[in-house]
Length: 492
Image (cartoon, rainbow, N blue to C red; front, top):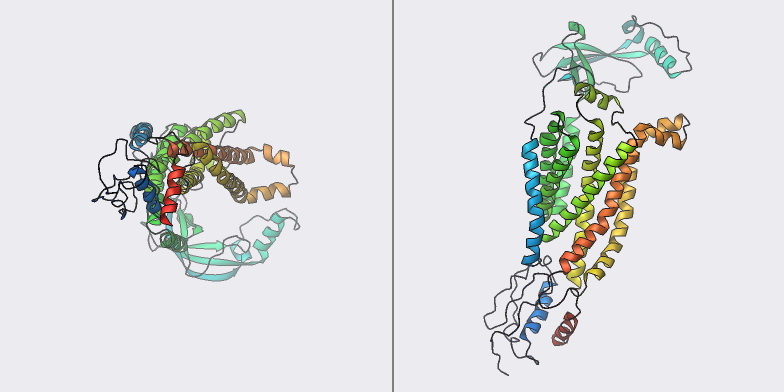
């Protein structure tokens, strides 16, 4: 037979992946737009019309899969489905943008410093001299304690009177009083001991007597922290290459949204829940699309993350109100409430739940979406139900590991508090009923429920999207199997 590249009577864009068009075979066939690697089919001209049954498009379709399944990213979905996804996500992104513009704070509000906790004026300093002195000489003005020597208070008081103390000379290295020195006495039982030449953080109290205006409140850890951050960035780029670099950029942008929008907007008096939803949505859109590309796969992950965040917000709001959690449980939250009494502390707690869950949600939704796409890439004949069943098995493993990770992360952060409850021989019921622990329980369980729900939701969305819009055949129809079989026989 002589090949005749005449246009067939039926559509030639037989799709193996959604929206994966293959070029009409002919002597001058060019690379198909559907081939992610851009390779042309060297046999497309020879097989254009010579096969039995007069189905040139079937042969071209099958041989195209011999190329596309070997390498390159999964094929994009069809234009129609991309329009549907865009119709959902573009209004959502526009609403997030409008929300940020409306709620944009323009900076944190100013206030008069109280000198309590973190609300203090601080400068940098350095220990220029250190000498050992008798504690009795520097603590002579202290009133002797009446506590028994067997108690921790008694032992500390005894050490402050009979032990060896350190007398440090500290020089202020920043600020208007740069070069000024003061003396800091370090008790023998103090958790923070100073060394000669050590860089420290000093607090400044302008209303105190001149000799007591400066005091050491912490050590300077900027160098080791910066070095650790550099090692982290280098490891991410070394392993992740360009994807890792984009992930680092997305991380910087996320912190920018947090520090420039979310925190100042809450301090300005905006509703913490609304601010958290808008800010978390902005972080989600920027991070996911920057790290994973502007694709339908990423869009499905965004939709799955959005549904899960809404569920977390509803559950968190309901249970925080039902459990009467005020969000004001320690010195830091008490200071915030004292400085800004108009802030809704329970709303701030809910905002923390939403933002804290976002990072793990991104991981789960992207993983599940990629699993569905790769399963479809391996076997394009799988319908949405088969894809869902295969991918949900992967999701169950993910659920088990992620939930365990969340619980252990919160338990590790609250380990000193749990240790105190253990020392006090408190029952598990009493510990769980205390507001400080109840907040962490609600935070953990609400976030975990959202994570668990994100797996079936995202998997179902991805399976429907990747299986939809197959021109010429219903979704999930097994019509492609004989075609793939003929391709294998031809290769032999």
